[in-house]
Length: 287
Image (cartoon, rainbow, N blue to C red):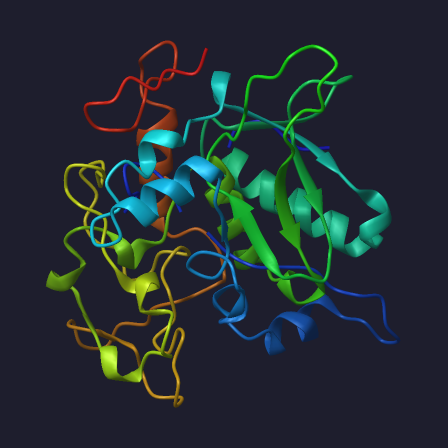
């Protein structure tokens, strides 16, 4: 089970991709050495690996250039606790261990707790369909009448998603993080090479506005596990994101960066009693 204790958060949120198979001579170390860092960026969901709710999708479509209101539909998990259910038939023993290691890494570096679902309470379902690595962003709970089927929140880890940093990336999406390079001040730190981006997916590189996101006072993080790789969504193999600072690497999927940890703790763990909304000027308290 998961141990106790355990970003530039766009108003406090972010994402990734997922899952391995059992095969002769399987080695986690070998598997991780060959996983493409772009795996989460190859998906057909929003920004590659973000599963949007209907409200989030509507917000994006209504304000395609600014995405105002996107974060107003995303909530933090109450009591700093992520309730989860693992579809064990979708994973082998090694994969389940990696899922739990991802949870433990987050829990050990913050106040976040993970616990198994009890009875019929709302939980994120961790599944392993072949559809890729993706997750909802933040708590995705919808009120429903007694007898109605509850909306299912999902974190999907396909076989090629099982790298520690990718698992953590998707879990941070579940906790409410969006991608690093979409923050409002990203142009001070990276240059987007629009001519190298595949036609039709340019929207994945638009920015959130200062009115809808906050960095929690943490500087831009080239090393964030939530940052795109240099050639994300490239049509020709050339870079689509160029860091303005020399000698830095972006798109690592080894695990949480120091600044990821600071942001997560500022988002969930600073003294405040009940977790309040991370959305600026929006009352989104989790009831």
